[in-house]
Length: 101
Image (cartoon, rainbow, N blue to C red; front, top):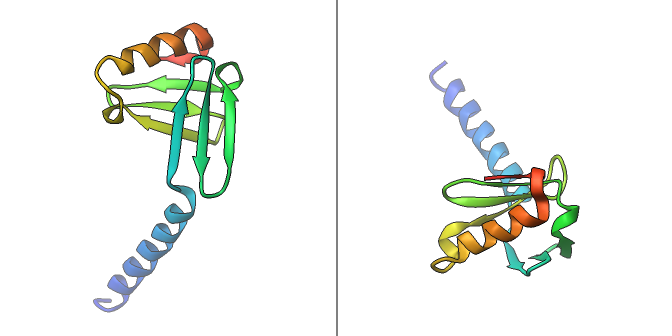
């Protein structure tokens, strides 16, 4: 038992790490008045705000749901002073009831 449990724990942790590594890729998000652009090592996309499934804002980040199971996130700490409020206003106007903040 003492040998078997640490082995299973390590194996599960390695599997989880490999899965998360595939899911969470480095990304750049550029915001525009009417759309946002996502650049990763896998693809580049430009999405008008009207086509977003939903956008959620909390105290630390914006979550851009491009579909039911796909989300892009923008930490507020990367924004300058006052920019988070400006982004919030633009998203509220564009998404209306699909914006939660």
